[in-house]
Amino acid sequence: MLKFIIITGGVISGLGKGIVTSSIGKLLQARGFKIQICKIDPYLNIDAGTMRPTVHGEVWVTYDGGETDQDLGHYERFLNRELSKQNNITTGQVYLQVIQNERSGKYLGSDVEIFPHVSEEIKRRIKNVAKDDTDFILVEIGGTAGDYQNIPFLQACRLLKYEEDLPVIFVHVVYVPIPAHLGEAKTKPVQQSVRFLWEMGVAPDMIVCRSERPVDDVRKKKISTFCNISSKNIFSSHDVKSVYKVPLLLEEQGMTSQIFEKFNIENGKPDLDLWNSLIEKINSPKKKVKIGLVAKYFKTGAFLLPDSYVSVVESVKHAATHLSIEPEIVWFDALEIEKKPELLSEVDGVIVPGGFGSTGIEGKIRAAKYARENNIPYLGLCLGLQVAVIDFARNVCGLKANSSEFDVGAEHSVIDILPEQRELLKNNDYGSSMRLGNYPTVIKKGSKLFEIYGESIILRRHRHRYEVNPKYHVLLQENGLVFSGISPDEKLVEFIELPEHKFFFATQAHPEFSSSFEKPEPLFLNFVKSCT
Ligand code: GLN
Image (cartoon, rainbow, N blue to C red):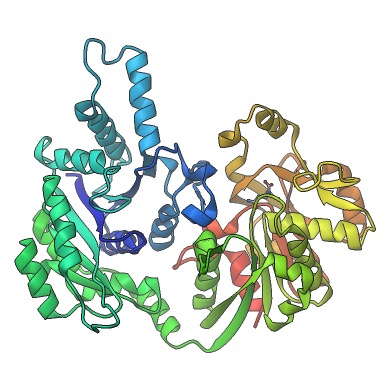
């Protein structure tokens, strides 16, 4: 029978609920269970596509073209499998559906209400992520207990249990602060957060405490006493060197046995051999590399927010782990690189990740130029391909080149929008004007790219509007730029390379959405290798 594990958060946001959810998923998967994970985002946006990365973090792209919350990325990286856009539910999707139902007469005669109509739609969507063979659905409810945005979702999950009599447990992930002036872990915020859940009619079955240091038995006892949960169902998820250690941390504390006890099922042994061997490599790296990321969405006020590039950073880490290398990510502001590209001489390799709009563009073009001219390994991701082509057109082919995204009147728009996308933009249809999700690339035999992938057709995820302008394909190639991956109709450039260079590859795709801890993406693997 399909079982449900609902994960809620308490005290503050940004706790790493997604990592705890992914870890529980991994532990169940390692015992052979078939699982689905679904993320609920209580905002009114239909999806994350139109959100600013500095506010919301990275937009994750699913194979079927969904633009979702970055937690889906964590799930895929831990589980080493693909999840659909249906695995991300937002308030916007739910209300839109209910209103459409009402307009089309589906509820004829009823007052359409949050309960039962909205909660029914939420339950329907949650159950909809299950496949025929699914054993467990993990549902992570975004936000924090006490937010009124997530009340309908909490209620819907409660109703799964008490109205539909389905096997459901609630896991509450909470913050346990250790104020510096006290030096002691305080549990009061946990107690208050659990009270918010009680007000909603939800009594958590388990508590996962996020803290800087391990939460000890004294604190667990206190939480147990005030929150009506036995100490054996209270777990510590303290800060660790790598997020991939969290499944092991929870396993050591017996979390899976407790989950099985609650559902009355037998506890098997997990197969975590590969996982453990990778953690060993993280514990004792043989080399170090410095990777420069030339970025623009990583500062909010006085704080760094590398979340905007989480998949790129994780893909580097996956590759490095497999190679027993410890990577250090060095952040460069594209605006500074515009003035001082030589700052990049300090790193072993350069990544120019994706992005939109003209801010910092000249800096990114200079980064591509600097890496090209100084034989520094270069990996360009989407926008990173476009700036590499602009640099090549300007400095090798001698054109006054740009992308029409940054300069509509450029003399040579070597990067230009496709006519179909232009139509959508004219109508302000920003929500659906991109080339999204998986598209195939045909890899040229004999290219270095073919050596990397070892196959002639690959699928990678996309999220962009602009392309290498077909008018310049011949000129760019005549000057030595190799189009080593193209679309099957031969119209679009998917991958470029410079064969004489130590490592110079860029792609219109986002290979960072195809990397997992157990299976690094080949382009990243070869990039990190070339940096040593
Ligand atoms: N802004 C560019 C485009 O839309 C690149 C997008 C990206 O890097 N994801 O084509």
